[in-house]
View 1 (cartoon, one colour):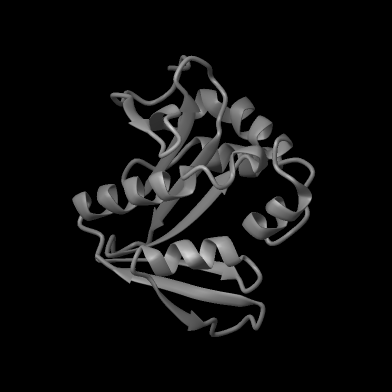
View 2: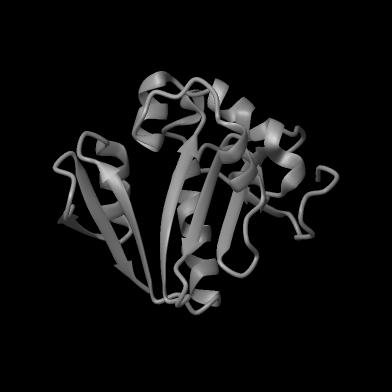
Length: 174
């Protein structure tokens, strides 16, 4: 685990193709790994995740992503068993009540389709239940077929977004 990363026991998981991954919490020392993940995502995948074609994460965004609030956020990374590189990350940010949280997910373009997103989102949902969160939601671009399929398969409901025609709001009661 990187120096300065939060104290959290690494969890080992195996993807359907047999790939072994470490799942661990994201912390302050992981800022470079977050930038590296972005550099290994296609512009199309970046736009689907951030709703904009970013080339770099701003210093403020890197700070926010690498310094999750332990009372309100859960931030998990999937890494190869033997190396320190993020293959995917998942975040959950709870509202002030602690009963509702929004999630976001990003996976290295070359690793899409291997089950990393499902693994990370299932881990987020389990941890959300453990924190007493009652509902998880996310905003997904209407064209993001893979994320919408995953949401359906994991029991999320899909609704029209209240303000943005190009987005779908996905929700799951826990």
